[in-house]
Image (tube, rainbow, N blue to C red):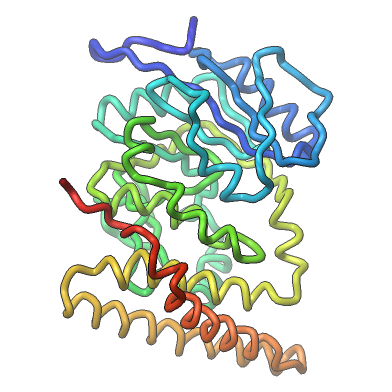
Length: 335
């Protein structure tokens, strides 16, 4: 079967875009093999590898390599002139697909009339009680009982996840970045290259939300598939560097503030919504100080608090620079 197939009298085609440094090893091999085993074959499999890195030895014979500028955003937000298919499936280099993963996701897009769809590979709702409490206390990431949404973006910039999904597919306001699919025509309308500003940070923390929330905010329909069969092999090729960086809290704080400012505060269309967004973010920031202070006393170092405040302060300065202010609107004006 070729890279297109019939669903409800409509014919779709898709191509796969993978970003990599070429260092994922066995995980990348498993991914390529799982792509080869898809019940519906892609038109193209294009691997966008960072400049200066070597092509992996293992091949399945259907992939094409394109060397691009290194960076999580730079290797994902591209013009994709090489792709002519109806859909683009974005993959990191450390996920493994079940043979019918693409078929399920495309069928869900057609059945639910989605413009994009992600796979629930992190399964927040299946976390242990201890991990759920930790996520809520430290990051204010909490479950919700609303059966309307898989994930919701809150006014303070955090997300909430459905506590007990009883369907396989839900509409969503955001989705995980390692595996998601979008209509190419919608991708082009959303001007994703405008969000490359985050690449200038030491690490593109929060890129998944910055990218996929834009779909929802601009009135397109995003879904999440809970039974895609896609598994995260957790290669953490680039995030390992971030997790060992002593300034990771500074990077996280700066990115969180900047993303919140662009996607929620600035894009709020009334004064009351802006005030509510400010109060929500301020309350989150005050709450964050509590676990940070506890950690500081346990580690006998106040550097975490310092990095938190400095990150927010530098973010405030950043969002008032001419570079940031000249960015096109996150919510694209309709013509």
